Amino acid sequence: MTADLDCPYCGETVALPLDPDQPATTLIEDCPVCCRPIQVCINIDASGAPAISAAYREDE
Ligand SMILES: [Zn+2]
Image (cartoon, rainbow, N blue to C red; front, side, top):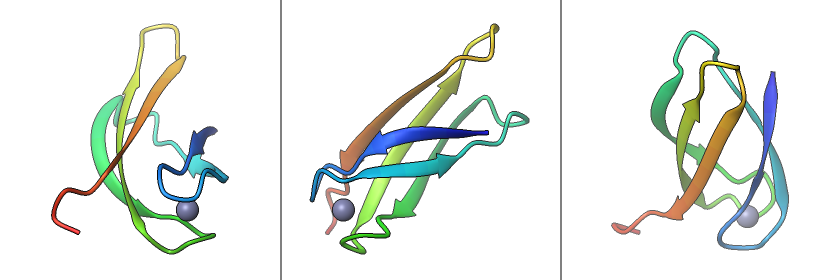
């Protein structure tokens, strides 16, 4: 199970692996294109549809 995420730095689409056992989580994923850390908030609703939001890390 993956979700598409747009990197906030370079704009590339990144395939993000999702863990259905963690329906609400925040993690840091390094962009495979520009290698910068993306803060990702994931919320998977009751129907299994993921809502993904990406943000810059403020401490970078
Ligand atoms: Zn990137």
